[in-house]
Length: 161
Image 1: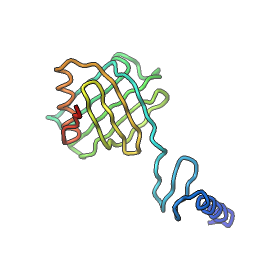
Image 2: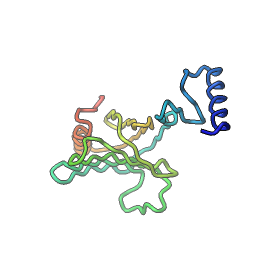
Image 3: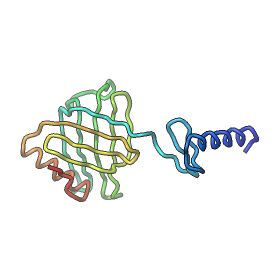
Image 4: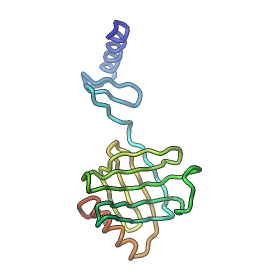
């Protein structure tokens, strides 16, 4: 490490200590560096009403997907400016549940940490702390299907009332 970089890091650590940061943590912008681990930005909330909710599975439930979208399935993705959330797992290769989403500006992905389900709303939290608050209107039959698919993805019933 060059002298200049070392001095810069020392001044950042000193500054963080005077601001109440825990010793050994280096806070720069929206990220905290602890050793070699990087923690993500503070939670961002993506909130929308889904026009479509789709549940699909393949290969005898080895692949499971649930999507919440502000657009119908005929929409061309190249011009997307509205959010969606896709929750998926390929249990043939991993137990990990992944999400793909568009926040209205850009596409991203992460792991899924938690899902809470209500009759007309779902609340999900990603591994990096992004929050998804999604409203929807479903028939009783479609809601029962959604609940069953989410049970498979979460390995438990996430229905909260």
